Image (tube, rainbow, N blue to C red; front, side, top):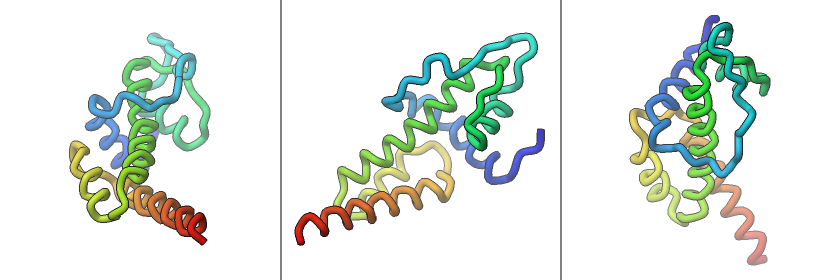
Length: 127
């Protein structure tokens, strides 16, 4: 299977951070289907799941589960970091320094968009 540069970048990022980001607040029991003999690699299954939402049987169930949890955990942490910071740059610096390696651009974009939505909600409440 061929992977895009963007997918490879994100996949490598999740691999680097799967030990640190292992709580997502979402149960994924039963999502990963092990098939040690005929299953596909964790990378191929993760790509399929990430792009289509469909899960293929995998010969690397523990790795696949940790990658999915890592992705969900990072998104949860971004949401929580946004809620904890009023100053965008301070919060962004904090969250970017917690990752192993260089985070993909979507991490900063997600942080900024969620913080902007939070600021807009707060300003509407004060009107």
